[in-house]
Length: 295
Image (tube, rainbow, N blue to C red):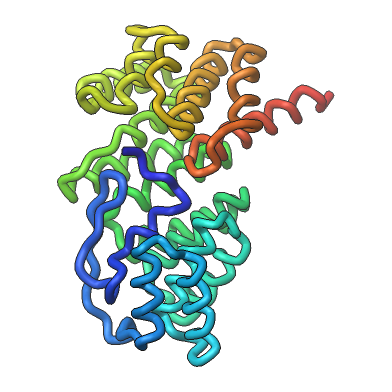
């Protein structure tokens, strides 16, 4: 299932945060770090978090931080819960504390970037994701996050480069994701590079997941199915948001701006805020609206 951008760090190993965990298509490994030795209070907080009681877990993390304001495990736990609660400014502030204390903490940089992205602060998101990729280059999701940010900033050649890096790093980790190919495809269309766009789409069609999302998106883009058929395949609000976004992007690329706006506007008003496409649709919709009123 598609990784939801705001909650990926909630899948950290809850006991000790060492070992590995899987989010989306990406497998991430941790090495044991002495600073992650947990107090009993923090250990109990992660137990509560793992059981689904995020409210009490957050209280435990806050209490632990009153005793030791630089407790990395407590800071990470607090930041993850705040992000999941969509309290993005607070999550950003917590991750900011972490990276100031632990400037080489790749996952904290990525969390900071996700919080900034959700706040539509693309400058802070960009610098955070760049730092995350510098600290942990073999991480497809970090580069994918960077590519989404470049798309929102209108930096389409940079989006292509980051998307290609994302695909490469996913492959290096024996993982796969269709989304970097979708980013590259639409970024090429935005720059008018139709040849590379079609080459990318052909590759995506050859490597699409079997009988699972987002395969119907690829089928729609190649013309195998229509927009109504694509919508019929959605099974949750995240997929519905993605479907409307990609329909809107395709219509936008073919010059059907008013038809595109219907779909991008739907995402802006009703979309699932947990996916990257929601923020991209909002950004493009706003940019297009501003362009219409500027003489």
